[in-house]
Length: 402
Image 1 (tube, rainbow, N blue to C red):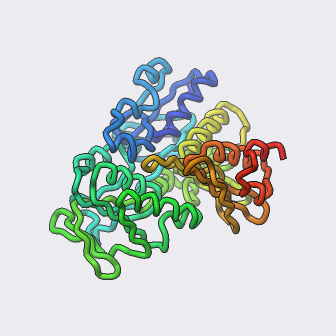
Image 2: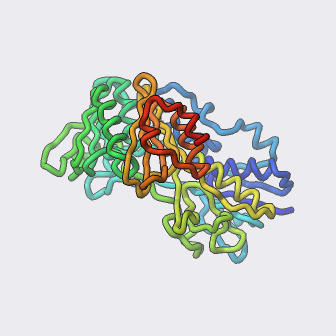
Image 3: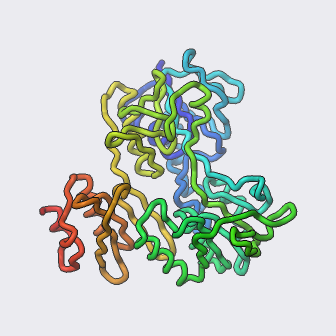
């Protein structure tokens, strides 16, 4: 009986296993995961779960019964230690598990603050896993002082939760503005103002020299010499693809585990999907860190394991929830040279990224209609006239017919 082994029990791993069964695969399916919890949603970790508004079981992607009913074996709390691609065996807890096809959905790991500057002190956290958030939840008490290193989406989402819970929050951003790597100045300005309205202090163009404290963090020293007191610190300085198992097995990596358009790695019968995988994109390579990509790419891999020849056609989209603002992003803004601002109803607004006359992406704040229309236009390869987009009198749906 054929055996598909999936290493990585996140969104991509769960999606691949479910798709194999939905397509009629009758062989054995095994998911190996380092965490003790079954596959779960990560986005709510830094929002509803951290706020205490969501119980752990509501994070689970599927019920425990689903895996039993679908004959999907979960090996949780177990780390894949080695991969022998010639023998087609993965070693887990000293046990050699044979496979016919192996899918690497190992995800990504957070960058941590270096121990040399105090990153190993108690009271310093990252936000990536259930265990990470469980470890820090007790720190979120009104009146306490939190310093967040990094003004990306993870850091800002944690700042929003902390501010809502009554903490004194400071965000440090080494770049000249928050969200500089991922968004236009207009989006940065929007979220800077939003956080300021909730009492969060944002220090841009401000680096971290070191963390202060003996055994436990008590403050931070900034690159300009200032010192700030801190009861705890969250590092939100990005993530990197988890490629260690693949690299040790001699699988080619290129900003992640390199795959072809079908999801195949450089080694026969080994596939990759999700945060850990990079794939061909418009003459180059792309790696996406999003739920949508993890699901879609993993499902394409499942089809191709069963003999399909489906090229992965990425349709990038992302979201972030901060306070009462829902940011929805369609497309990738790389290479934009123009931003068009479109007011929505009430306080809603959207920013449309163009390169010349070509629409690349849309950032929509509390404007789901702008997001949905923008996403559809990008998928269709259609670019509306920027002046028409900017005109609040233009009916958005009319853009789809132009």
